[in-house]
Amino acid sequence: MPRARSHQDAPFCGVTDRPSTSPALSLRAVVQLTGLSKAYIYNLIAQGNFPRPAKVGRRSIWNSQEIFAWLEARFAERPARQGALSDVENSRRRRR
Image (cartoon, rainbow, N blue to C red; front, side, top):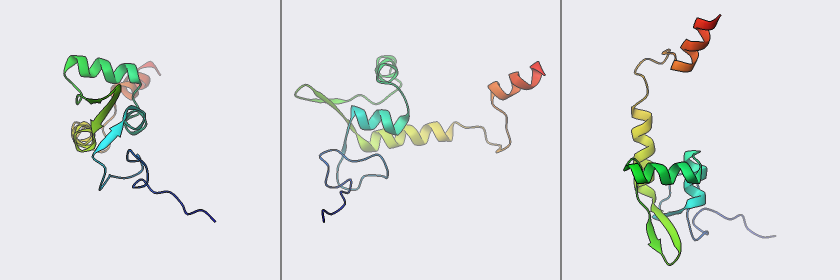
């Protein structure tokens, strides 16, 4: 019976938990981790609002710690109150 693969077996770390040994993320992993499209990621990079990748041959790889720091900064930007309504929720309430 084959053993289960862990993120440490893969050449690039998985997106299920914080990597401990692999410092690099593929574009596919960054897309899965952030929920952003490839095009939007590259637009954010062009604007200076997302970590820049390193090129290894033709492949782009991202420093996993930079991606996790970027995500943590997004969470820190959330409203302080847990019950705070988003702009979308506020606009829906006004239409009723």
